[in-house]
Image 1 (cartoon, one colour):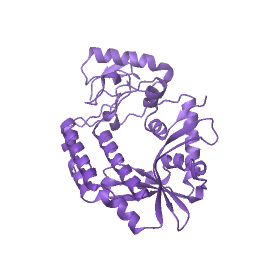
Image 2: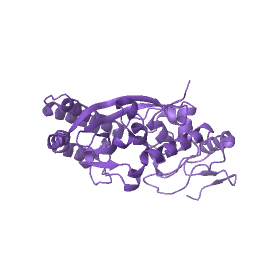
Image 3: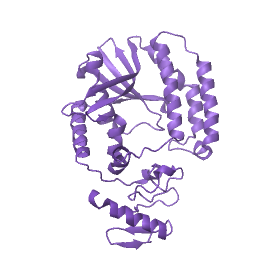
Image 4: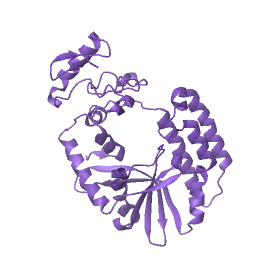
Length: 320
């Protein structure tokens, strides 16, 4: 039976090889619900309802959709009071973004289709599954939105992201997510790769960003094949960074679930209060992981949280 992959699984490996190992090799599936996840789900469901109505030429009940969003916003504010009121990199709170979306963003899709009557929605949350080229791996998933432009016979693949700011140019060049989606299109719609264009729909930024430079599908296919090879040989090198602070396997995460504790000794010690580049333990290869984890846990039990174990020197280091 072939191994099944999704974009989120591949993306996790690009973020951190060891986190990938914990989740997919060791099967430590940890509940990671949070404000960002729940807000993303809410907006995705709203956008799907909008797209389905437009696709089927049905009237959109904006009042009902808005009321639902407002009710959910109250729940999110109660559930995540600190995060809800915090300013993000765009200088807005969660409430600012939601209310802005209700004022203008929620109408964007219908207005776009009215202004571009040569474009129609073919599908929302379109499921796919296929064998990835050059491998025995099965890829599966759902494409948020598929549109068709009758003027140039182009298929437009869209993914909805609840980002606070537009993506940087370097992240738009070879988006692996769209590579995976594009390779499903010949089987789904008989589309050739040169008929496919891709874009990110960013509701909270009130914009759509085109994604994928020339030949990005070919380049991305080669990149994914390389990633799959690394996974096959168990290349699970960790990538500690400030992002560890939000990881379910990192003890500096204030919302760390109990089932995620004491699994990763390689995390960054960066927090919002102590912005440093120190790590709890250094990677010494998969063959030495059990020793590193043993020493890490011993250190955790014997010392305060600001004490590091330096695996390279074999000494405790408290020079943070």
